[in-house]
Amino acid sequence: MRRRDMFRTAVATLAAGGALIGLHKARAADAAGTARIVYHLSDLDKAAFVLGNIRNHYEGTDGKVVIALVVHGPALAAFKSKAASGSVSSGFAALQKQGLAAHACANTMQGMDMSLTDLLPGFVTAARGGVVKLAELQRDGYVYLRP
Image 1 (cartoon, rainbow, N blue to C red):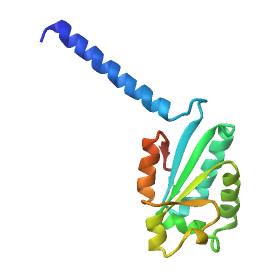
Image 2 (cartoon, helix red, strand yellow; image 1 turned 135 degrees about the vertical axis):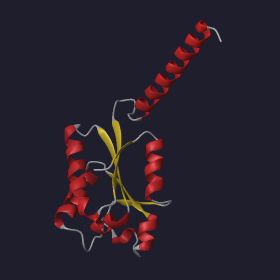
Image 3 (spheres, rainbow, N blue to C red; image 1 turned 60 degrees about the horizontal axis):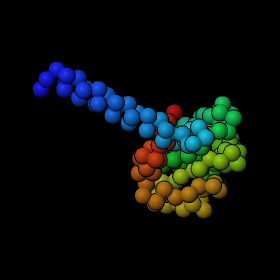
Image 4 (spheres, rainbow, N blue to C red; image 1 turned 45 degrees about the vertical axis):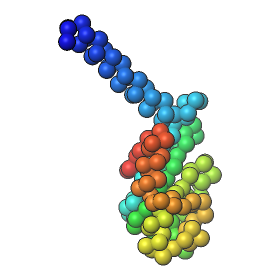
């Protein structure tokens, strides 16, 4: 291969890589520039902390953000309507009003013998599992955060 051909190949490769990076950045925000974020919560002791992070995220972006929360494993117990702390219950309700999309892992619910009616209002089921939902949201351009 000639030097000129090697240079052209290198430039084409870099351009393709740059296009992929640009595509990823474009997918992480909608046409209006609104970021899409997914928070991952599986640790029971971090429930209030993560809700605080989400509240701060809404405030720091003046609400110009789309946020999803995926809860699985032990953390789901923090959202049981009969056992949720006052701070988790009120914090979660306030975030729902701001547009939080909350997903509860179907596998965890089955393992804990609970249903959506056992959880605070506002959850939907991540039917194929919490980790699958996380991967789907990332594929759809959501930025992944796990505080």
